[in-house]
Length: 140
Image (cartoon, rainbow, N blue to C red):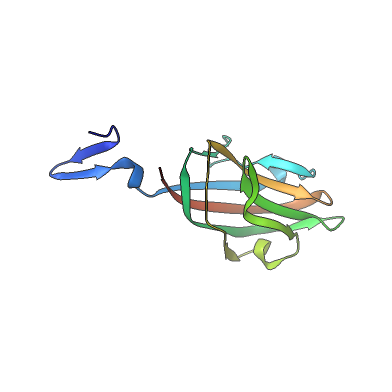
């Protein structure tokens, strides 16, 4: 019997097929805004990661505070080894990051345990905050 199969009363379920949700955040006040990759954190302030073979079936970003920059900063979202897997480099003033906006992100699959990354480029950010929600299950 596969090791991830669990029994609940009279029902058998495969833990790998259960949808999981990961919420991570970027907050300028906590993470800074220097150009480069920033590992996003969960609600406990710990670096968040997706497991190996995580099949992302739904993801979105919600703007909390508008991103700001003294230049033309861009932000990409992804994970270790695929820095633009969720959203490619997008200008800081794009609707994706606007307060109150909720923007769907690309679907993908990890090939290793991977940290969730926001990659800032072109210029540093000087303000901003957003949350990212990722729904996934463990694939083969």
